Image (tube, rainbow, N blue to C red; front, top):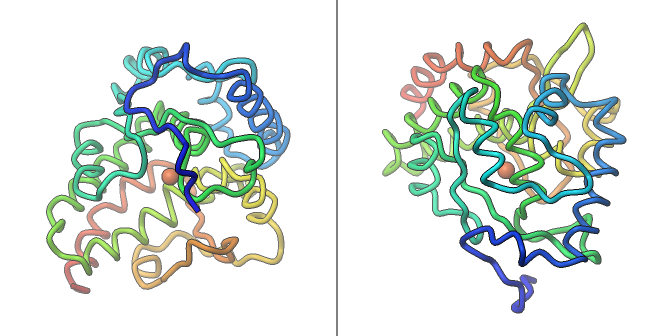
Length: 246
Ligand SMILES: [Fe+2]
C-alpha cells in the first residue's frame, strides 16, 4: 500500500533531505556496492565514479547534469512518481530521464511499491554517461512515440525495455555481469541474477519481443549482450520485427 503521508516532490530541494534519508542512502549504497564490485558491468562501475556518487552524499541533480553534459548531454526531469507512458518517452526522446527525488524509508529497504530515487538515480543514471547506451535509449523512445497509440506495439517494446534497460546482462571478458537498473538497484535481484537458478540467453531481438515477463517476482530469465554498441545496432531489427508483429 502506498503510504499516504509520503511527500513526493516535483523538484529536488536538497536541504529537505532528512537524517534518515542520508542514512538510508548510505546503507543502500554500501550494501549494493559491496555486491556490485563483483557482479556489475565495469562500464557501470566506471560510470559511478564519473557521476560522482558516494555513500556519504545523496546525489545532487544539478551536479549529475554537469557531469553528464560533456559526455552525452542527458538531463534529469524530476517527477513525483512513475510518468505516464507518452510523457516518459517524450522526455527520453529529448535526452531527459524522468527521475524521482524521494527515498524509501528505513523499514522498507527491500520492498517498495514504486521506484524511488535509489532505483532511478543509483540504478539508471550512471550509464546515462555512456554514449552507446544513451543512443539506444533515445532510439527506443522514438520508436515508442511512433507507435504510442498502438497498445500492442507499446507492450512489445516494453519487453525490449525490460530485458535491456531494466534487467539486462552483459558479457565482459567471458564473464556475465549486470547492467540493468532493476537488478543494479536491488539487493535481491543482484543476488539472484547470476546464479545457476536463472536462465540466460544471448541477446536476440525476435526472442525478446516474444518473451513475456512478470514484475512481481524475482526474474528467472535474462538476455545477454556482448557490448553496449550491440544495443543500438539492434534498433533496425527491433523496428522491422515489431512491424511484423502488430
Ligand atoms: Fe527503472
